[in-house]
Image 1 (cartoon, rainbow, N blue to C red):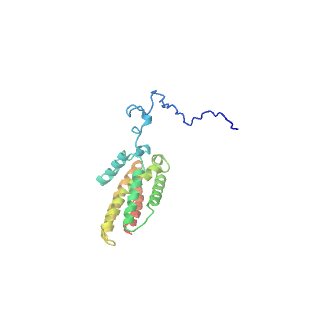
Image 2: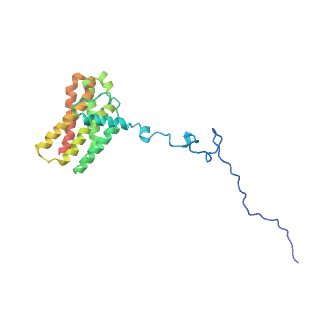
Length: 218
């Protein structure tokens, strides 16, 4: 005896969902249907500032400071140009100095040496000014910036020293010229607020850059 069970029809097809375009709250149109000119500024990266500008690095100012040191070694530095302190330029000079030292077969922790030199000169300046108005004008950040930019002649000397004979009087004479160049620049800006102590500040700067020149010669 056969049993007959009625079965309902089964539909295996999947329903197609209705596409709903995402509308922009301001324009009322979908982002896909908008042309690049119609899309708002928040939806594109064309109007965003460059990365260096977001980091606070002014490349034009760094380039102007560099040219003012290289092209005018005998002219006093412009205090207004270096009033805005930065460490991006000095960091590049320190890397260049270390690179030329590596090419000469030497390895020095230049960044730590420049940091110690900045602390030393800031301490000397604060003691000479007696903690008065001059020390308020020169903070540690600006002192490190001036010492770092004063390293530019030392970078040039480290590059020139690769082609000079070792152990002769020529390299010592060239080193003294570059030391005076760095000293004139750094001391002229450091002593801009304390003219009565210009000689002592210049002597301290000369000691600092003379040590860097010995790193190149030795």
